[in-house]
Amino acid sequence: MSLSNYEIMRNRMRKEFVKYDQEKMIKKFNLNFDKDYLYLDFLCRNYRIDRKNGTVEWSKDGFLSASEADYNESMTIYDVLCYSKDGCHLSGNFCPLHMAKGMVRTLYGGDTKLFQNTAVKFQGRTKQLAHACSVLGKPAGGAGDVAAVLQAFPFLPVMFQYWDGDDEFLPNMKFMFDENILDYMHFETVQFMTFHILKRIEETAFEYSGT
Image (cartoon, rainbow, N blue to C red):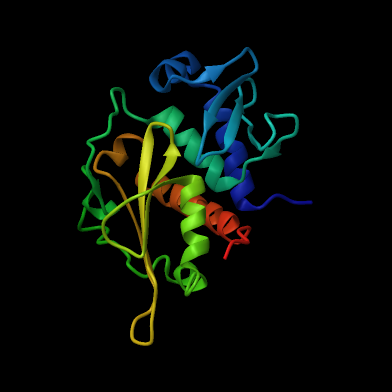
């Protein structure tokens, strides 16, 4: 079976990953490690990165079994570990991506329609959505019918907000990031991370059978 372009790019990044200083990654993000793997939680799921070939895997059972991470997962992890700035730290202030420090705002003004298709899936399903957010983070006050601070990484939270629709307005969802998000990853990678978060929210929400 031939590889997709996404798989080719992901596999290419494996070779780049092993060129970087893994001891520096361990110290910067306080990673668990052994001689074979680096370990990192990503959105409340356990991941490991092969120290010799760069393959990223995740597991639900403490790595008794493992699944290879997809493009969005892998590329986000590679970017954070390899390209985050020395001394990266949180500002403590959340903002839309186009307002992040270092963002060239003339090139990106924010796209409020980017998550519309996913928002529509949750029309009238705020209980399922709230359940997913409680699994992947902690409820947050403020705007939205459902709002939570999701733990993208142990060191990097993301704010999620959702407004349910009605006869006059479509449902809407948005993400906000720490002002210093671009010290942790490239702009494009924020999109990879966000789409992975959406995938995990959907998976978790639609597993919920509560009333």
